[in-house]
Length: 387
Image 1: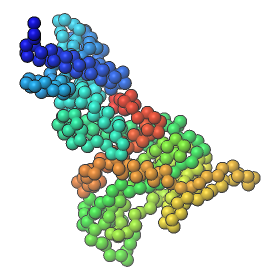
Image 2: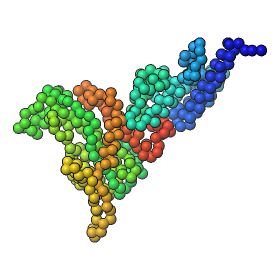
Image 3: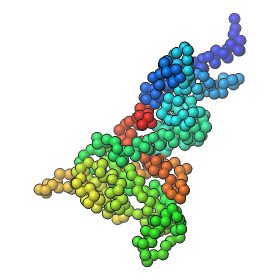
Image 4: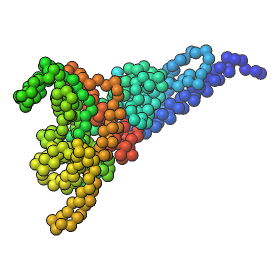
């Protein structure tokens, strides 16, 4: 007996539901195994039952369409059912993630997995919310909320690393070559009558009594970075914004700024520090971190001297180390960091520097260090998001 069109359509729907459920179950098992989702030990409602390991489909997007397509049940909502027959509470699978409930409550399980995969596999720049929303069929707000949560969490962990709150001794090897340099990641245009920058403008007038106050100043948003040549490990710290007149050179890093950043405190004792010619680096190594016994190897970028051979000798005049000084590795890191920052990020926020610029820099630092250890994967990201 030949089956009717309705029966054939029902068979196709059953097969598609089964295929979609199997794909969602595999995504769920992978995410739970890597620690992205933490299922409660007991039911949140009855406090006695346990949630099942198998997902249950409760809602599918585009349900009820006359013609069945390949993406009919691609982004369905899945729940975990309590095994207590007097309760049978249903828990949304996405609610077991580390982000707040209101952050990504409209996203489904497979959408979350695909967005995180896009962020991990990004090459030069992070995925934009518009691109993510078009690819996973979600709202731009939902994509933006998840991407911002990942950025803030990774930035917080990287900031603790730069502050010395986490043990990173095995990444910063002793008696190695380290590069230190500063870089500008933005520029502000400040009026001479600005109340927010009043103190810095008065300080500039005191230091330049014979110069007329310009109509506006340029404020350079800067970062100080230290990297290890062997491991590639990177540490960052924001520097204070310095105001300079128009068309003036970018300010150099002073000894006081290098000492306040306190990045050299994390560099092991007896290491070689390569700098770009700014006087603040050797002065700080000698006077502020003299007990570290750093060997400073300087080049001069203003005179187009980017590399220089150095030979270090012991007390008896015997050469024990020969290096090529320079900051090429750190300069390459600055280029990648500036590409990683989204172009839509604003420079100013309420007449001051937008703090999200530093958050994005710290997020890039976390990603860079994870790449150096070949640990840029879902497991490492999940551990970071749950901190």
